[in-house]
Length: 186
Image 1 (cartoon, helix red, strand yellow):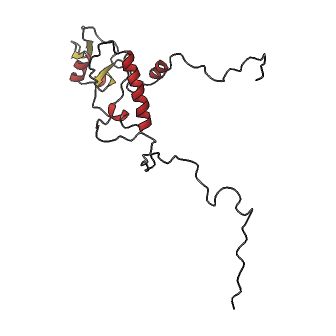
Image 2: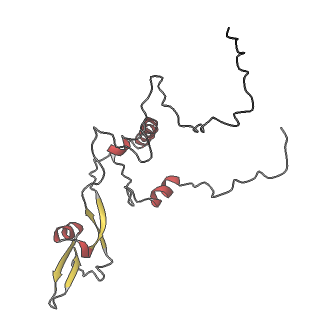
Image 3: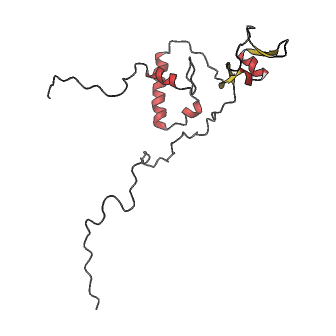
């Protein structure tokens, strides 16, 4: 082994983060808010088996690490942000707002504490919606970009590889086997 006084070159690119999970969760809005990250069970169970095995192992580690806490049962409600002016009375009430007509005949929005909302066109509220994610535990939901190949009897699906171009690889005429000598026909 050769030792050199030269410093070890640093890898190019961004340095590794010390908070990779936080960084990822802050960068996405799919099932994530400031306090929770939600994975639809039907989609997680539709992922390929190796992914499920890795994820199950990670969840087991997570639950073991925090087994000393009293875990409640969580109720997840599919929701999205909507502008106040686009909500009906029921949705406004769910979000903690009400709409009324003032003495001048203008529509006024108020929060639960009675304070007038100054800019309802730009104010959004979280309201429940119908769940767009399939919730059928008996049928598989195919992940995008994954083709489901049946597992052959050997146990491992055929791995995709480069396709062979027509005529095979490389020049085909560089060597020919001699043909069988012709037999004279009498």
